[in-house]
Image (cartoon, rainbow, N blue to C red):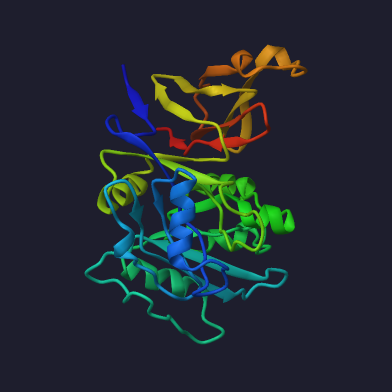
Length: 311
């Protein structure tokens, strides 16, 4: 029996945020208070990604919490009708990284590929940020080479401007044979309740920088606003998901709905959590290039699996 798992076989689940800002750039809280806030919210790791300022924050790494080095770089878009491109770099290698609190300056008309190439040189895990907020077209993102992930949900953009979702951009990248991963994040600036709304759950052998970043590079994580995903795999020609009780489970194949199941046959009036569905299977037809799943809980919160690329 051939089985392909989305997540590593061994390890624990760790909750983290990969995009946040402090008073070092345009956030409200200072780094110490922001780390404290996320620890109180039950997170296991946080990356502070201030605009054009690299943050390492080694002093906030402990046995039960990890800071991931990070930065957000931005450029104006060359294309018409596109505002800008924002790129987040996570976990840059300490031996070749920027210095802590180093400001990264570059000419106004620097191309997005140039800043991605800079982060590639620093061995960063590279995320395309808030595509809907940036008014980025799918075609413009496809031209950018070297991206590892894209934000399918950005809480600040949704709260602030109703532009938080990037699912369509994610599918379009997958459709063009770009293997990227889905990110849920806050992009918190703390000017309103823009924290604790989106995150990733990473399955890792331990809670350390090296292990978390390694797991992210392998795609051993999912994005969420609330629901939990326990397993996602393909065994022979069957795609399977196991999760916390949810209202709906929907498989997506080649950018199109593949199959879905709803709790209580779609009658959600007075639906209790105990009535939720916790697993579903989808028989592949043979023409799918990739398969992924989206689950939605009783409160309307979603979680997104990474895509499994099919032979």
